[in-house]
Image (cartoon, rainbow over all chains, first blue to last red):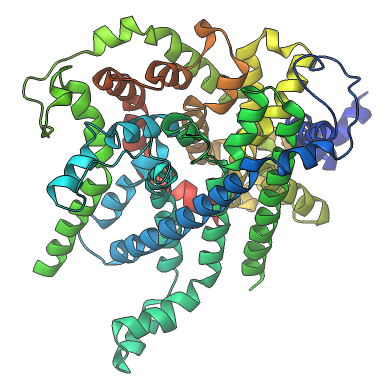
Length: 300
Length: 271
């Protein structure tokens, strides 16, 4: 008996058990649903067949059905806009702030850390606060814009189909800026000071220093932050739930919210899994690129 | 010298501009029902009202917050038990197998909850987990945050020198003895901060709770806030009071652990 348990306490068996504990949990509660999701996307799943294991296979019908719906194209464009604008704005604001806080002044580290207060809050609460700021009649943003003369009349941020998506993007940028800034600060801190000093002595101005030193030295970091930005933006659900629920009439809907709506509001679960499968494939692709790029950085 | 303090002043302005939504939440929570609709809006409450007790009992926040607390604690316990050992092994052994494990963990980290909930909901229904909705949320959310915990804890274990562990083994400790009495205590701070992060994230969990818990008495504070807001709310001072009660503990923990959280995040995310 002692001989049997020995490798588990002392040898490689100990490592295996520790890894298997976590990996087993992940396979059971993430890996299995992934596969099940794929299976369901080929089945007809609704409230009646929910509990049964023997559901009719419909081949690619769900895929054809959902992708040929009239709203699918608009929601796709919204998703692209949501991700593109959010990531671009988070990155540029985050980068600018990171460079600013890199200047050595009293309280810089502490003040920079305060930005993360936005990141740590539950996204649903952030959504609630923004929906009050953005409220059409008594929202403070409209008041500020009106008194600065930037707009002639009140903007109905959450109910005007032309701006609803941009309202969610605005809140999402707010949520993502601190994380971008903190990660980019780490990269900036890693650039040796004397390169800048040498460039300054050679007469390079601030712009030239930025484009010839900062940007090239930050390439790996920027790649990582952009991939993470795309991944986190595609995870964003709570803001949609709190701000617009994808409305009015899908004007601010995106794939990750639509998939949930299909499954949990219209109970077209098979169709919901189709969107889910397609989106997960895309997210995993981005994540694989990210992991590869950080690996590369390790070797270098 | 003047220039330095000038930069501090600009930084203060940037921080206040960024944190304005938080300020607005607290200020609105203190305003009366009529003052929130004043035009122009007041940036400082004229006659502050303390509505915490009223909102707390009217919306049964004790029930909601208790459920949030329960879910967050359950998730943190599962994740710490399953993840700590794995993070340690991943920090010590580099070979093809461990690289594969690390890759799987990283891939599992990015799966969006709103897309995973469809298969999880159906599967949980079929095995009868819908009878215990809070437990299902704990199980699903633990799978969601376990990879993050492993990645951040691994970064902590990397900083614990191997020599200490080897010395313990030479002294006759078993592997498990060395792990529990040497490694874990040395990595204590990192493990604690990571657990706090996981706890805070699960404290604000929404997608799984919204989809898996139908009974009001079992729902966490996020779902409660969402149903209180409704589509056409006008009780903004109530909503903001609710929000303020909900996030103030989160913000206090954040301010206390700010330095550790920032360094933990940055070491884990880029390594």
